[in-house]
Length: 377
Ligand SMILES: Cc1cc2nc3c(=O)[nH]c(=O)nc-3n(C[C@H](O)[C@H](O)[C@H](O)COP(=O)(O)OP(=O)(O)OC[C@H]3O[C@@H](n4cnc5c(N)ncnc54)[C@H](O)[C@@H]3O)c2cc1C
Figure 1 (cartoon, helix red, strand yellow):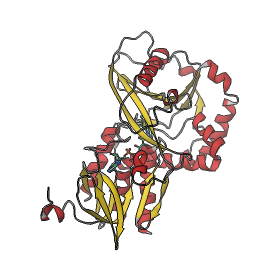
Figure 2 (tube, rainbow, N blue to C red):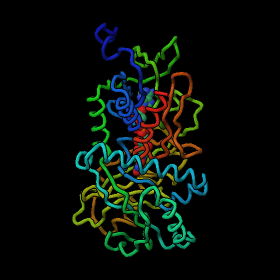
Figure 3 (cartoon, rainbow, N blue to C red):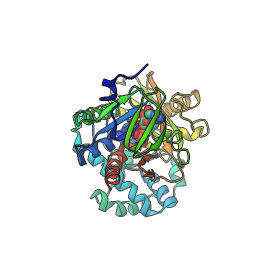
Figure 4 (cartoon, rainbow, N blue to C red):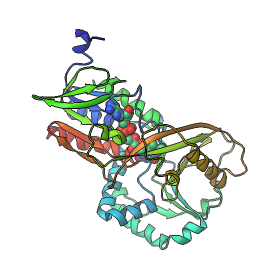
């Protein structure tokens, strides 16, 4: 198929910036770029019919880290790195709430919890000390003296089973991932951003003063600057980056009458996560039960993980209830040896904002701000 002159001079016209990937990171980058310079011509290109990576396939948590996650990050990467990430995530969540009203994206500051069995609680020495330490460190970020607090007395009223310890974070919430992406997509389009779907970028090259993009659909695209926001898939275009894919699988139950569960929940150092979705339970994770199998970009589900999730559901959340599993899916996260995202110029006029380490819902608005500064400097 040849391209018409009309197409060449409109949809496919050269742009100041072309963003590859219309997930949350690509979208927030477009938003910040247009906010900073409304005259900039920007296009976002995605190979999916809609964003098809993690942004519309996650659990919809609006969170900035549980006690064990932050304690582990501090031990591995140091307090400064841990706090830098918390600050970015916290600020990112404030951004989302500033740009969208709660009803548009079903945002609810419902409160979050980390849970422990008796065996786990016994293994974690100094939990109380860690809570105090993190509360002191996080207080300048959250403005709260006690971001985390023990809340064992809520275990029964939340309907949890075989759990003996609970830590509450009242600043955590959840949202509707699909509505957030769709609203942001509509918003950037209203700001003049061109969105092109079902076009896969297979490579790029600097030619003269611009970047030429190669596409699997043989559509010619030119940009002054190229921004790669393909997260877990980034090594297709930037093979030397430290990024590995990590699949996250999810299931959702049928509606359950009088479901007592309300909030976001983290278990086993964040490897399991669940929440109520109205009167249903959404549960995800268990990647640590089959690390190798889950190091993939395949957007499928597996019996191993789904059975593990069902077992978890019937042990800790819904023993004795009758329900069906109505939905199952997976999404792909981008991980690496470090937890901080990679936001940089990789070669002249080519930039990337990738490796969200499973935290991109919260990080994306702040990453977008950083990219807008970087591209205009
Ligand atoms: C199950 C699960 C649970 C999660 N829970 C949370 C959570 O509670 N809180 C949180 O903050 N984060 C969470 N995350 C992580 C969060 O969803 C991601 O970090 C975030 O969505 C990443 O956004 P992104 O835009 O960088 O990548 P993506 O959303 O993956 O977008 C990348 C886009 O690039 C496109 N693409 C890839 N290659 C090409 C190409 N060659 N050409 C054109 N287009 C291409 C893809 O189609 C895709 O749309 C979770 C993720 C999963 C999977």
